[in-house]
Amino acid sequence: MWGLLLVMLVRGVVYLNERGEGKESGQTQEAAMTATAGEEGVQESAEPAIAQKKPVQDKPASGQAAAGQEEAKSAKALSAYDRMWVNVYLTEEKRIEKMPIELYVRGVLAGEMPIDFELEALKAQAIAARTYIYKRLLQQDRSGLGDEAKQADVNDTVMNQVYVSLSQLLSRWSGTDKEANLAKLNEAVEQTKGQIVTYDGEPIQASFFSTSNGYTENASDYWDMDLPYLRSVASPWDKTISPKYKETVTMSLKAFSAKLGVKKSAVSQMRILDTTEGKRIKTVLIGRDKFSGREIREKLGLASSQFHWTILDDEIRITTFGYGHGVGMSQWGANGMAMKGQTADQILAHYYTGTKLEKAAGLLD
Image 1 (cartoon, helix red, strand yellow):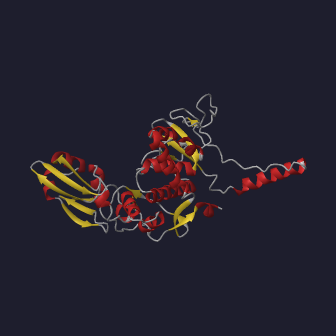
Image 2: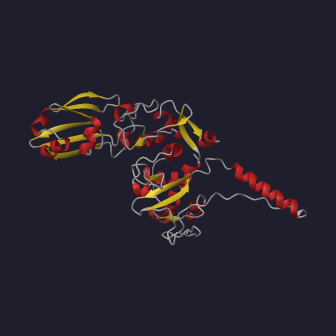
Image 3: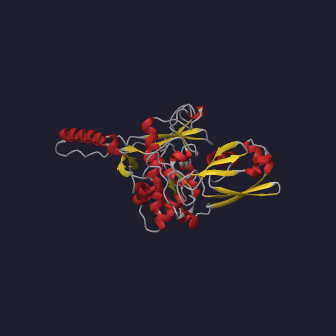
C-alpha cells in the first residue's frame, strides 16, 4: 500500500553525477519504481503520462487521427507549472536528483517539518516550500550553491531548503508508520497542489523558522531588506508547545570575548541599547563596540537573538527565547494554530501580512 502512495507522483528516477551524466557510462538507468524499501530505483521521475483516446473501431484511420489530436490537446493542456522540474544537489551523495516540482515539495516537507504536526500546519509548510522554489526557479536564482552544484537549482541543506531524497524517504519509517506517514505527506501536498503565497501578484520570499519568542521579526530588523509582508506579528502558541522555546548555554568569558573580538574586561559592562518590534535584541554595546542581535547570535551560535545573560565568576550564562531568525512563519506557531482549529490559509495569512493564495499555474500561463 505505501508503495502506491509513492508511485502516484513517481514513475521513475534517474541518478545524475556532478557532470549531469547518467550513473553508468553516461546513460540513464531506467527501472520501474517498486514498493521494496532500500531497492535502488531510477532517481528521475518521468513526465506525467498523457491520456490517449482509443480509436473508433469502425473508422480506424479517422480514429487514429482523433487519438493523435487528443494527445496533442492533452499536451497543450499541461500548464507551464506542470512542466516545472527541480534539480536538487544531494550534498552527501554528490549527485543531482531531478523531479517535478510537486515531488520536490514533498521531499522538503519531510525534511523541514515533523510528520506528527497537524495536517493544516503541514499544508501551510508545503505551500511555503512551494512558494520558495517557485520564486527561485522563476528568477533563476542560484544563491547558496557551490561550484559542485552549478547544474542544480537548489541543494538539500538549510542553505536552500532541507530536502529528503526518495531513497531516504523509503527507509525513514517501517510498517504501519510508513503507510500512515507517507499518506499524510501526500495528502498535505496534494490538497495544496500548485498553491503559492503572493503579494501584489508576485510570489513572496516565504521565510520560515522553528520557534518564536512570542513574536515574529520584521525582515528589516534581521536582514537588509524591507518586505511589507514580513512584519512582526504575535505568535503566542510557541511558548507552551515548542521544546525549543527556551535554551541556556554557558561558556567562559575568555571564549565569549574571543568569539566577539572584544576585551574580556569589557564583557561585564555589556548592555542592550535597543530592541526590535519582535522583542529581540537590536543593538548591544560591549566596551566601545556595537553589535546587532543577529551578529551576537551568529558569532556565538545562539538559538535566537532574544536573550539575557548572567556573569558568574569567569563564566557567562546566556538564556535564549525562540529558535531561528524569527522572520516569517513560525513552524511551531503554525502547529499551535492548527491545534486550535485554524486552516492552512489562516495560518499563512497570519504570518505573511497582506498576502493571498494563488495558483502558480495561473501566474505562469
